[in-house]
Image 1: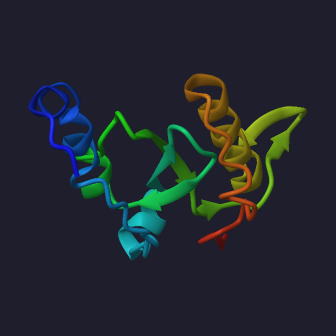
Image 2: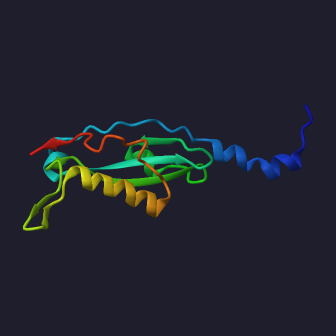
Image 3: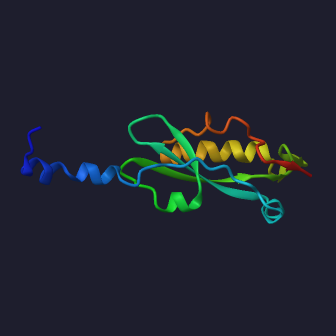
Length: 129
């Protein structure tokens, strides 16, 4: 093997970018307080050079390598009515289905990350009232 110090000096940074890049999948466990609050924050990363989306913990989200991953956050509604409730034609209470769909669309528009395949069940974690 040929060893070239100038190559190592110039391109060694790529090895550093890869260190600590292991992403661990995370599955939230909403608490009673979360259900009383009505939502949880969920965190995802999309690999920059691939269409791989992974849900991660907040701790992983805070330290993600942004050279390798695009991190996104959304507020996931977990309690309340299943669908929008209208009174006299005016929205009275936002439904879980519509609110979660809105959040997925917001992240796609603002961050360019389409979470629809990662979050196919808009009622995930939902407890109806």
